[in-house]
Image (cartoon, rainbow, N blue to C red; front, top):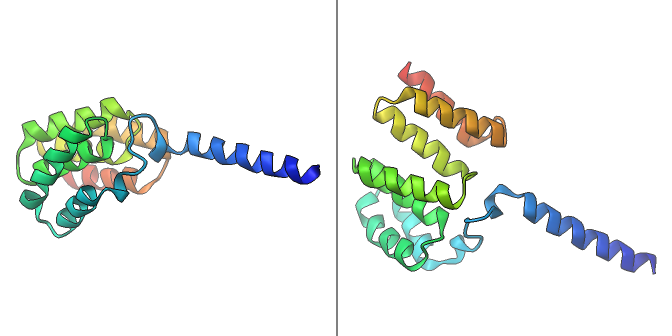
Length: 149
């Protein structure tokens, strides 16, 4: 009987950990990395082929409109290509789906810096620090802000 209780507790802690994991927050697509189109789009972005990634990301956001990760990458690729209006809409959509999306908050903050909106970038940094402390996304945005100052 004590073994059954152990298994039940382990299962409950596992569920709790999943519920608290920001990557699994509402609006995030927990299986995004298993989608071949998403994986291909990420590879193209890693290779700085932003124009090549866009058709994949456009299709993903059409097919999976609740996929915050795809919207975030769509924003990133568009920002890198100078399509700031499309990037802004994509980041806003990602954050509407998942207000705690660390990548979207960082990249949107970087977009704000490019647009000369340092106060908005600093607000994103404060949000990031509140969500994750000194995580990679917060540190990267803080560094970008410091470089612009």
